[in-house]
Amino acid sequence: MSKYTLHINGKAQAVDVEPDTPLLWALRDTLGLVGTKYGCGLGQCGACTVHIDGVPARSCLTPVSSVGKQKITTIEGLDPNAQHPLQQAWQELDVPQCGYCQAGQIMTACHLLEQHPKPTDAQVDDAMAGNLCRCATYTRIRAGIHRAAA
Ligand code: FES
Image (tube, rainbow, N blue to C red; front, side, top):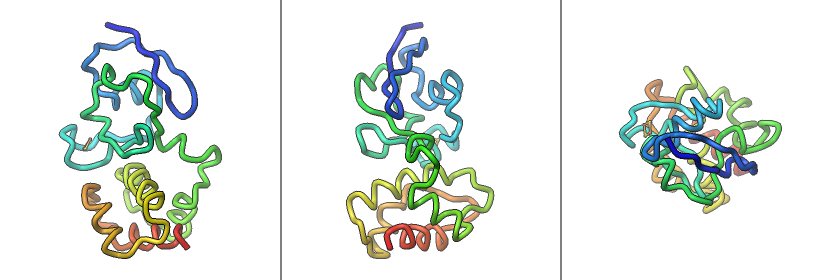
């Protein structure tokens, strides 16, 4: 085991884990930040998406030892009151069905809106292509992003 200080949602957090432990498990199991979900563990579904220095990253494929001083943002850190415009839009439009993938969806959508404050459908589809939803809520996800951008 090795000790690391991670910078998560504006706070320094100590973890004591094996160096190759995926960030996902440090977040969920060590720090109790369970909003970030485990889907495939292979980098293919996007359920585990967090921001590392503002860029969406697959926490299931990110060893804790590789994070260093980079700033990690999870769904819990997006807004102190869970009222980010995307979270508001998700509630207003009942975007989730089972909800499992939605934290990852929102983290990816957040980065999209930072890059493109008024994205086109094509930009939405392109940005969100790596985030899978087994309930196929894609139409509502797209609507939610447009609502948040309005
Ligand atoms: Fe990380 Fe699926 S759990 S991409």
